[in-house]
Length: 584
Image (cartoon, rainbow, N blue to C red; front, side, top):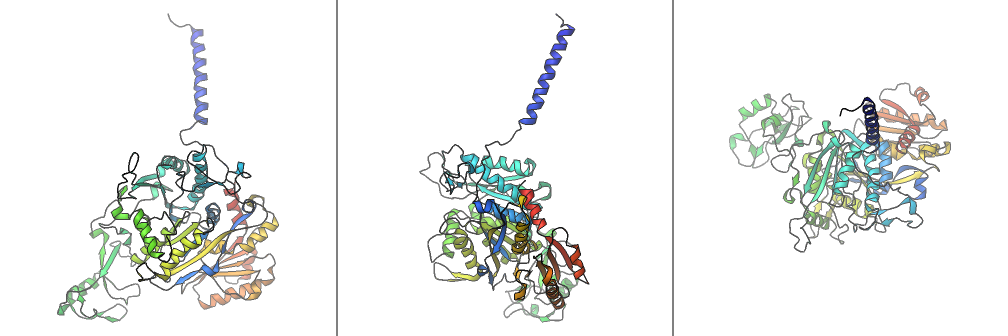
């Protein structure tokens, strides 16, 4: 029987109500990862104050070796949440690649969480056992805070790699989808961490871990191709702007001696060079001249080095797209990582039980950075410091300019950051004696060591004038790190409490960061005189001047007759604004 008009009207109203119900549910219930967000507690001092960085000057490294003069590396000792907060001021949008090896939350890996609700019961936090009902909630709450801060640090072409195992891999993938966006997931890499079967395993012999790779913006990031060995094609560059594109160079002198190939060559600078004893050039003098005329021979930036032959990337086989399965023969395994650490710490027991092999980190850094663009690498679960060690190795291998920042907590009486993370790289940079009693030459280079600290009596969102004054006074290391000018310039004793100056480690065309942090401008004339003195020593130096100001530093421009190569900024307001945004 045909439905009556009134009956149809009733059905339409019911369907309309059903549609509204589904609309409401779509708005409130979304696909994704849900858990009980557990508030994390910190020490009261850090909860009620403003985070800063403080240099431990006696731990600075300036080692002679192949890497002397390269960009300085940084180690920060402290809770990585506070360190990441500071880095959100110093390195927002500047980091090219992040690698982290966080707690796996296995129930026996020592993962500790300070549940703010039960702080009186667990004042130092509690280790989270496998059967704990909030085990995954604790871990996800812990990780989400840090990944959100880390996302801010990545450049538009930045990427993050996260090591994990089966305990949290599925949750971590969904968490990364939430934080970075599902469309920015790149790959779930399989790393063969063991090569021997575990015959006493109950179900399967577990011989791999995961490394989740996520980009800040997947449309902007692509991995470098791998050469037909483990060497990355990022070694190709174009320092002379050759229109044929990027190239790499090889030595022109060969061991197989041919007399007619042993002749002198005049470099573009007029210097005459010849092969070393017992060697000759790879080609005849006539062909060599043609290669020079074709700009196939590289004599270095100053035109006075021994000649090298240029091979263009367009002429060679285009390498290999990185695979998602990384075998131990290519990138190392757990045992090789431990053996490597034992060689460095031959005078003591193995100081860290779960290091990663340098070859694994070298692979990650190789496919993610170009050595000639001064990329910045961050590891805020630094552990034994493998990431910096790998960075040093690569910089030596391809004459790269990568800079590495490590963050690691002290963690107990042993202080992992000081006695393992720092000590390992100290030995690698200065040299050490291995287990066989052999001297291993240091790689050289420089490093700065900082600790997280706190100022004021209120959080950034509630900072009063006294807090702002103290922040400006103690923000020197933050500002120096933001400008990547980490060397302290000696100033008169009368400057103490009023101003300070930092510089980079370049020999010429230095960059200076000059900070007048006091609201009393009585020492401004001395401050300006010191800047003028530094300007006179190198006319091409650049200066960034930070001035304590409640609003704008514009008035300070009157102190400089010539603002060439000088930029003026205000403090402490920009620091507080970033901190406030992070804290909601």
